[in-house]
Length: 518
Image 1: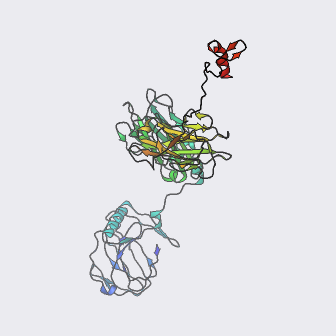
Image 2 (image 1 turned 135 degrees about the vertical axis):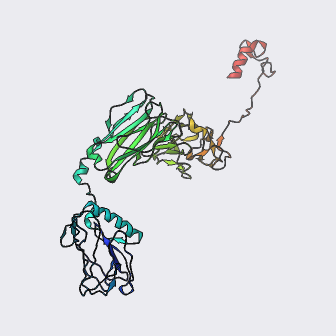
């Protein structure tokens, strides 16, 4: 084996010979070298020449069963000054410095060396390998450095394109243990495991890989179980969850390892009691709920190559009690312009100061809480119309009938944690005050259209986002006095006048009434 060493202020000491190569440790200048105590795992220590070393050749010296030593020589092309050895002998030559390993092992060792252009291959017995480990440990304790051969550090081969091409969705098998049903038959990824719409809990899952897939990595997965919490992670072929304890799964996570993780993405989502399908999670993220006591009823898993386009909704894949979020999104239909882009959480939908009336409105929630949002509109020449919910249009878009007022409220679980506040920008009046939870905002009886609207959620007990003065103006008809002339049939101006055979007197009741009317 040939090794090149270059000039340096630090010099090296041959500390021993290992199965992998030379063991070197920092040394001192030759002229300063003193007595060196040999390591317990080496027979002798020799410093390198003080001059430049351009090439080192080594062979191993060990005791054979017949006690005939096999020489080990480190040769240099540069002259060396005499160096005292730890055995009391000095070796000096104009062309080389040699090191003799007198006793490496009492066991038979066979050594063969074959030198190529840049590497040397060796065949070493187990006893020499043990010596290699001991020598390496000794050098590490003394700050030494081990020079290893290329063969001892060869990396594992990378997977070929053909290996990866063999992997597809059918190589991932999944089965589940369902309440009142037991273990279902295994299915491949992209198929649903568990049940939906039957109110049955998932109690355990087991994922496994085919040989084509397992040769490239593994799958690790974990479950959150009722009354237990997060269990330890398990690997392919193991059960995660419980069987026979009647406990529901509430959440899961899963991920690939090694080459599988480098070349594939794992997507999965959970069907949860009262919530339905949540969003998709990916590569170790949690899917399901925690702390809400909701059963996980079904799972869907998809395996896709890295870089693939995934169109699934990845919002709200995991809901944890105390960390829930909620927001409100809304849009408006403007006269002669149509539906505008959706905005959220207190931003303006519509316009201000442009005299463009809103004709319809849609509002929806994006929330970790159960419940919905309900809203109602007052339409020009129609009045209050029936309330709608969850993004449905309220109003008469395209009819040229303006909205004049709105009412918005929360329903269900979310109403226990949030208030919904809203305000409108009314024609001629500008921004009115904020109101909340089903009260009217806008005008009525004034024929003034709504031009803009803002809606937001505020946690219970927190302040309104702005002034709450005058959120709604209603015009009530005021009474008017009209002059009413008084007519009496006995009025002397006409009481004794005859009209045909009758007068306006007591006998002229009917004619009098007719006269008063006509």
